Amino acid sequence: MKRYSHAVSPVLLVFAVVAAIGSIAAQKKESGSDPYTQTKREWLVTEFNSQYATPPTGARAGHLIHAIEDATDENTVILWAGLIKGGDREIMNESLDLARDALELIAEVHGFDDWLIIREQIRTPDKK
Image (cartoon, rainbow, N blue to C red; front, side, top):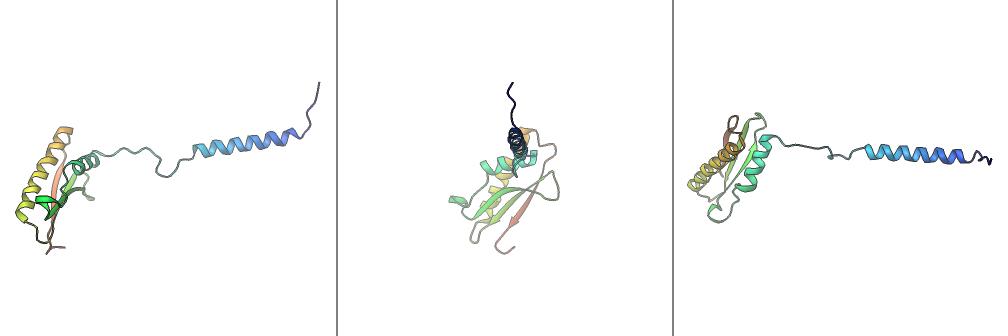
């Protein structure tokens, strides 16, 4: 029977160390790689903004509207409306009413209407 020299042992040791390091590296997660599930409020804000947020273009060139999360209350969504200098406040108010209706409809469709609170925050050129 042929015996192997002791030179094989260091090779096996190096192989074992490399395999262990590779296994540890494979288990280490990159920053941001953890699964994340949005909250109901985040889904609501994302869906509203993707479909109904009003950019300042066309007939509504004088204002913009989008939804944001209220940092102080987890059940509140803020409809933020900004009137651009020279914009028509009446058109913005009509758009804000439509935005509120759209947000309420999205919440109702998803069953979020029982906890949702909608607030409005309006910025005008004279209010900073």
